Image (cartoon, rainbow, N blue to C red; front, side, top):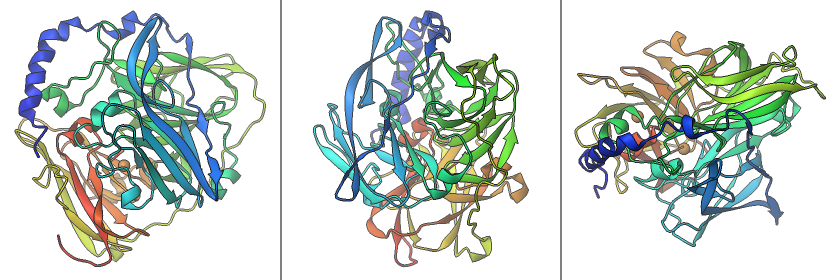
Length: 480
Ligand code: C2O
Ligand code: CU
Ligand code: CU
């Protein structure tokens, strides 16, 4: 089953070069210069039926206004681009019901969710057109910002690019007690950061060349919650931003235009133990960060969230409202359980590399019917990920594991290379060219000897080109 090789992609590459000229840098046809309001994805709290909270989601073909007077064809969930934010409470039983109204099959994966493998929404839980598939499980994890997105084998990148993704906010008792902003859309603001190419007629243009598969499909127009160059009016107080890098394969180097610092309070799957003060944040595809910006002294000011390398902005903040209710983010946020490397029972290594036809993990590209690793339940393991440099160039990658979180133990052989803002529960880790990271991984709660979880690079073009593998969680320690 070889359906995505670089050979077929290079035909597209040739086409891209030919018609490349017809691109318009879309910032030019976009007349709204930070004058349109930032959309906030609606919050879906779910409906309780017999003790189970049900969320009903329809995956649709839609038309969305990225540009004034232009309707762009999209895929969306319950709307016209992206999907609602699901609010989940730790401990509750949920049923997330996805109905596929597209003409093609897809899946919906709970990225960052701790759930059984058959509820994961991986390539193995296809939802055919007009079918409903439900992810049913009990929420069993700390407060964090997760997200859902399609994961069909070989087509994930396209489905996400076309607009399918949404946030999942998990709250627990601890998060509800902290003196931090929690007024959704007002001082607790979700920001789904993406970039897109649009063609001359304002349609989403997705056609990666071989080079773009390798380097990433880095597109010229920033889109924030589905809007180009939006603004938001905020109060002069602490503001919490939930940042998701929802791009296909662009690493964002984020900074505020006035250089202001901020505190990072959470990573992918948990709060950090203590806020970490930063003035710059790198976020690779799939990673999340929650940050607090203190605007108490900024009344009347405006500034932008910018991408450093591109020197362009995602969104403009106008501090135009007086604070109603202030918060004071505490110095200690939580206490995280760590794992000791001494307790590790296995060392697994994963080498990320590129070949002529595919991208590889340990020399293999993804096969749906091959299990690559068998991981024993409730055991701590060390997973070492190595981004092998090639002769001519290094590639950027990251690494994501389904169904659990991990702790970053080392970067390039040293624990001191792990940044303070990576010292939380992570599910996706950036790995630069030639870099090696060691992770402490433990799978808990769910054994399934048949249905696998995935691990992969979250650069979606890399994932679709084969940089993905499968593991099952077993009762016993055994080999494939
Ligand atoms: Cu965000 Cu395998 O996924
Ligand atoms: Cu995932
Ligand atoms: Cu990659």
